[in-house]
Length: 106
Length: 119
Image 1 (cartoon, each protein chain N blue to C red):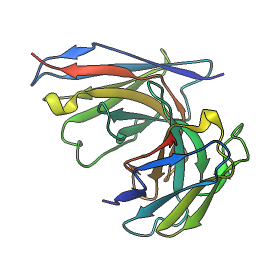
Image 2 (cartoon, helix red, strand yellow):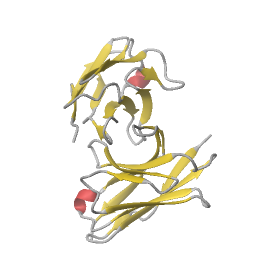
Image 3 (cartoon, helix red, strand yellow):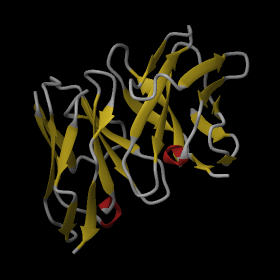
C-alpha cells in the first residue's frame, strides 16, 4: 500500500497569506497526485490533478507542484472562501488519500 | 450537467449488509468509471472501489473480501454492497466519477449519505 502523509495537520493563516501544504508518498507515484478541498458538511471538490493541472473553474491562486514522493499545494493569496480542509490523493496504485490539512482563520 | 445522488438506508444493524445506490443524472453512466468513497465523522477519506460500465471492478484490498459493486445502465445507477458491517463502517458514503483509465482521480462527487451501523 502507498501511504500519503500531509503536513501540517492544521494551519492557521490570515486572508492574503501565502499558504503551502505538503504531501509525501511512501514510494514514487510519479505525478499521479490530486488535491481536493472539502468544506464542512460538503463533498470534496477536485482542485488539481496530475500534480499541477488545475481543474476547470479553479482559481489561479491555487497551484500544485512536485513529482516522485514530494508534492505541494500552494494558495498564493488566501481568500475567505479558502478556509477548508485539503486532501491529497495518490492514484498511481489504486487510490489513497492523505489525512487532511485544515486551514483555519488565524 | 452531470450530478450524482446517493440513496439507501441510513441505519444498518451489525453483521448485516450495507446497500447503497448512486443515481447519475444529466449524463450517461456508460463509458465511465464509478467509485465509492467513505469518510467516518471527523476523519479522512477512504476509497472503497470502482467499477466500469463493462463490469470491470477494482476494490480496496483492505475491504475486498466484503465489497461488491454492480451497475445498471438502463437506470443510470450503480450500487455498493458491504457485508458483515460493524460500527467501524459508520461513515458518510460518497459516490464519485473516477476519471482516467489505469490511474484515476475523482472529478464529480455526490453529496454523500450518512450510514450508521448500530443495533
